[in-house]
Image 1 (cartoon, rainbow, N blue to C red):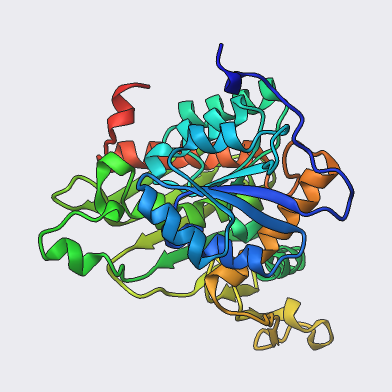
Image 2 (cartoon, rainbow, N blue to C red):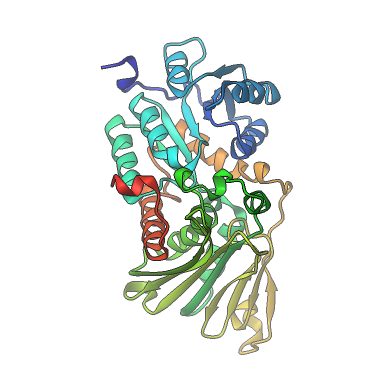
Length: 369
């Protein structure tokens, strides 16, 4: 058994000591995370590793990170609890296809783990990650920032004022900057099946995860999509049907696309409609109908602006809400988030896996499960 196989206690000491992170990856997602850490006094990055050592070195220099490592194994071995520069949490910002492997490796080495969305590629991987966290008695969470967003909190509150919901349309669509690269004949990671690419895994996870966050696991999944020659989807629709329970009869239509600008998302009830501009981080939020103004009685033209304001608009800065919660949970000795529990992450991957099956998107890992 190697040095990295045992479970060790990596919880920070004093309550005011920053939570120390090791980062896997040096791409734009890791850059956003580093920007969030720079704004959060409760966190600091101790080390970074990447598949290409030169990228890790450049990333460390750019973000003033003390250590860059040639591999994950080297980083874990160099920054264990007995080292001069220990790490508490490993942030997994590697390609989708490596999330499960890297998370499990870090957990089995005794580190807490924050893994970027999507949590995994398959339900089997997701469950293996949860099992590894349980065996190691370590904290594990998917980095789905929407759960901790002030806009989503506003949506949760507003939905409590509506009567019975019938249909919800959640949209996450944007023209991918990698689309032109693909059309020019290259295969960027965003459209590479070997790396878990495609619109479902990159963008579809936002509406699907929000639906599960608000309404729970659906009873049925129906999906359609358009495939690229590479084998991944470029846009599509996932319908989540709730056949029983509190939301019996509800349909949630999840739209995702890498080839078109986004549209608003809506929650339609008997007499009211709640609309939001973005299901990842809603800012403009409007309630229309009787619930918008209790003094208006049955005035169905009433509008109420529930929009939220943020001091920072850059994606990396918006990760600060999630980061602050991770630091709080790790310091408290928690093993998962109550607001975004592991069961929700597993449920979202199960929906996406079924949607991929129906659309015809296959990843190499599918042949192993």
